[in-house]
Every structure is written in C-alpha cells, then in structure tokens.
Amino acid sequence: MIARLKKYPFYLFLLPVFFVLHGYLENFGFISLEDALVLMLSYCGMALGIGLFSYLIFKDINKAALITAAWMSFFFFFAALHEFLKENAPKFFSKYSFMLSLSVVLLIVLYIILKRTKGKFLKFNLFINVLFIIYIFVDIGGLIWKSNNPSYQKLSVYSFARKNEYTICDTCAKPNIYFLLFDEYGSSISLKEKWNYENKLDSSLKKKGFSVQSRSQSNYNFTAFSMSATLNMSFIEGIKNIKSVTADDYANCNILVRDNQVITFLDAHGYDIVNYSMFDLAGHPASVEQSFLPLKTKLITDRTLFARMNKDIGWLLITRFPFNLFTKNHFLKHRENNNRFLEQVKEQTRKQSMKPKFVYAHFYMPHPPFFYDSVGNLKDNELVYHESKIIPPSSYLEYVTYTNGEILKLVDTIQTNDPKSIIVILSDHGFRVPTKDPFPHFFFQNMNAIYFPDKDYRMLYDSMTNVNQFRAIFNKTFNQKFPLLKDSSILLIDRKGP
Image (cartoon, rainbow, N blue to C red; front, side, top):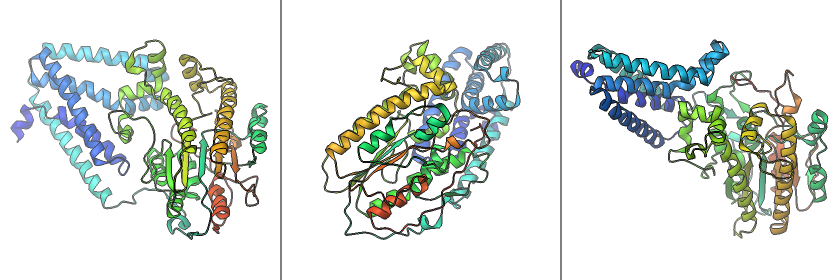
C-alpha cells in the first residue's frame, strides 16, 4: 500500500472528493447525498480531463497530476483565499486583477520547474495522498456524528409551532390565498421620511378594497430569517450571535421555511400549495431555473473560482465580452424569474380547481438589480450591474414605481378572475442602503397590504409585524385563536456586514 501511495498520484481524485465531502459536511441536511455524488463525479471528471491534457505536455503522470492539482486547488479554494485576503491584507492583494495575474505567473513558473526537473515526486505523492486520506476520514467521522445528532446547531421556532396548536375548521369557507412577497419593498412612510418619495401604491390599493398596514415592520432584516418568522408565525430560536450570523444560520433558515407552519396548517385544511419562489416548501420544490448540476449543490459550488468571479465581476464578462458562456449570469436570472412568476400567478387565477389553493410568489423586486426605469424601459446591463454595487436610492425609487405598476396589474387580474380570494402583499424587510446608524429603523419598515373579500379588517392593526401576519389571517378566516406575539424587530449582522 505504501509503495502504491508513493508511486501513484491518487490525490488527483482525492482532492475533488475531499472538497465536495467537506462541503457536504458543512451543509449537512441541505444537500442530498445523490446531488453531492453528481457534483463529486463532475469534479473528478474535470480533474481527469485536465490531467490527461497535462499528461500530453509532460509525458509524466506525476508531473501532470501535480500541475492539475495546483490549478484545481486554486479553483476550489479561491473563495476562501479571497475572503482571507480581504480581511487580513491590504485591499490591493484581494483585487481580481492581482490574484488572477499572480495565479497565471505562478502556474507558468510551476510549469517551467516541472519541465526542467527530473524528480519523480514519490515522497510528495505519499505525503499528499496520506494527507487527503486523513482529511476524508475525519470528514466521514463528522458525517457519522452529525447523522446521529440531527439537531446539531439547528435553529428552531417557538413551542406553539412545534406543537401544532391549531384546530381544523371543517365549516369555514376556504378561499384561495395569494401571498405575493415583494423583496425589499420599504413602507410608504419610510420612503417619504427617508427619501421624500410620495408612494401612490397605498392609495391605489385602498381604492381596490385593501387594508394597508402603513406602520408595519419586519422582524428581521435578512430575507431567510424574515421568511422563517413570517411563514412559521414565530420568532427564531438558536441564533448564537445576532451580530455575526453565519452561513449555517442562513442554511438552517431554509429548513425552517421548507417545513413552515403556514404550509402545514393549510395542508391540513386541504389546500393545494403553488410555489413560485426560490425557497423549497415541503413537497413543493423551489420554482427557479436550474443548471445541469443540482441546485442545492450551489452551497458548495459557489465557493469556486468561476462562481465567485461570476458573482463579483460577471457584469464585466457580460457587458464587455459578449460570450454565450456568461449570458446566464445569476443577476439576469432574477429578471427572468420575476417576469415568469408574474405570468404564472396570472395564469393561476384562470385555473379552476376542486381544492382551494395557496399561491406563494416571491418577486426579487424592488430589490436590486434595478432592471427597469420608472416607466418600464429595460436598462443597459452595465448600468444595472454598476447600480447593484452602489445601490443609488434614486434608482431604487424608480424601480419602486415600476414595481407598483406590476403589483396593480397583478391585483387587477386576481380580482377579476378570482374575486373571492384573499390577497396578501408583503415585503420581507425595508430598503437596506448602507448606513452608519447603529439601528437603522428603515431596514424593517416594510410594505404590508391585505385584501379580504368581505372587507372586514377588524383583526388587523396598523403596526403589525410579519410574525403576526398569518396569525391574524388564520384567526379571521379559519376561526383560530392564535395569540398575537409582541411586535419587535431584531437587527442581524452577518460576517460580511449588514
């Protein structure tokens, strides 16, 4: 065995196996084993392809494996290196121009050294092979431990949700419910107070019979946490440090959203669930565009070189180098999904069903990127990506105006085709623009409007927060007795800043 570990560069495949396995361990419970295996085989295939190409150059398996492993290590661990440099080195060293240029120089130097050397790299093979085998066994041990401790570091909601404290109302009317979530839509009061913007949406909705909760607030300032609270009708337990929330906290929120109590309640009342969002709901997967790789493996692949480049400087690759490879930048997918969801909700209003339905549509607007101006003209891609970096309030407010038009068209379609339905228009949080305010109140001031066909809004109140939204709706519609929780907002800060 030792002789084989010296002779053969098994690390060429141990490296991608370790990378995927470690990512699977870190995101345990959020990625299926089948999806992880697909990703692992894809990366092993990449290593094999690059290794064979390198072998044609060096005519030596160990040299080919070494340069392939060097390149793939940079590819796999680029995000970790980039974040380390941003936090611990002068800004110049974390710039893409420097990092990519240096990587090319180092790769050329390594190529020259390997071409000139006569060594067989037997000791190197042994060391790296053994090292990765140890790492892999350590991670396997971690997986075994987490498998036997399923509640490890998971967030939870308050006890009422865990105990399913509700009754089934067999005699209640069961209207269709349209839950329309418009991401980062600040309340009209906040837009007026902060940016002197006169929002006409409130008055337009009131004319259509809506109740607008003008002083509504979200409970959290990040989407995953806010949606967890909204759809579970509860605050979140288990956040270790609200001033430094982690990737695990975000991932655990996705579990809370997936298994949320609103869907559990409506399932029990015989509702069909229609999901037009980026979140998985139990039995109703996310309705977003997917690539050939499983969507959830993005938790791993987003750390790689190309994914990080696409996220940070993808707009350069699209606007200045129009290659088809980059036309599916993740920013542009938001526009495609928004437009698709708008049409799909309208289509749902025309579908007849024997069962009542709950339609959840999550629109990534007026959240940046600001794809349209106030009258609906499509903006130039380069301008869109530039504004997404600096978040100018003027562009946000123009996008609010555009979003208002889409909201009103959607409402008109629902009220025309499905007039007996309940319509909920809500935002997960307010407009978040960089600020030095220690507690930016406007981060939480959100849009909140509800339409009941009977226009009876006695159970609503003007300062209602998201955590009480469905409590109030279910109390009225299904004769429940959910106590309203104390309205409060919790400022979260992640490790990269607010």
